Image (cartoon, rainbow, N blue to C red):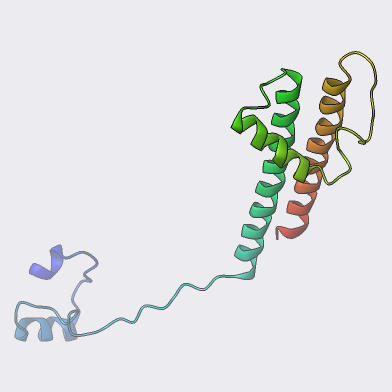
Length: 141
């Protein structure tokens, strides 16, 4: 009767009922050892994880460029450590294509620095989003 209330216990058959009645109160589960195997990782799982990491990296790069453009547009204090760090990261991420001085588009005149930042860093952010999504779709199974 005690075996009925155990979790995962099966209904006794004629062979197990006879052995259960002669056995002490402990079941034979304690005497058998189960070996646990390490769960196998499939290729699809690895490809999915790599695709997620690629998308995350491109998303971070796009965010850095967008925040840097915003910092320049609102004329943030460039002596601030956080603003300085974001602008340094943006110079690394812009691939020397979307630079402020010699980027895709170069504006002159009033608010030229703000226009250059918004257009060039904006194009760079859009580029990273497109490349990241395409790379994710190519790698994901």
